[in-house]
Image 1 (tube, one colour):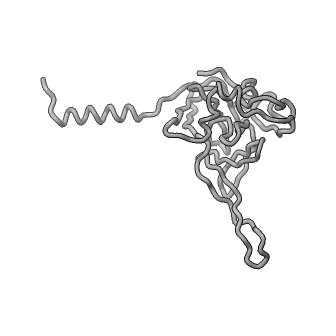
Image 2 (tube, rainbow, N blue to C red; image 1 turned 90 degrees about the vertical axis):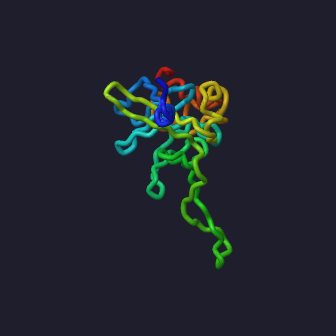
Length: 201
């Protein structure tokens, strides 16, 4: 029996809704008493962060130089929670992946630059959806469009790019081997995360 125009429209709408629905990937590992979980999912290095009781998920390697962004300290800037990249101290918001910077203006009296507050250059780090369910953590990867951190996100790129030039990079919280200033010399960030990640999914 044939379908009317209304039937086809309903089917098309249902197909579009299904296509737009997020696809969830279960990741291995637990947070326990830590606030970070570094995993591989969908061919990407990603990190799950618990900050003030809320979950966030973002690409692990910094958009700027491929540094191990998500082992950096969490700071609050103008009411926004940011992670401070341990390599070059770029401030990236954990909820939107925006890069913040401290702007300056010229003081007309002293003719010198003075601080003018924090501003955003927009999203530079890709962020993803994350849920904690009864059987563990699930992530839904946002891969729409282009974001700068994409160039370092893949597991393959992370193993050869973003090499620290020295051993004086400060560490952070989040897994074995991440605290202190040792262990970074000549290592791509992907190798840094390799030792503390959960198995890929």
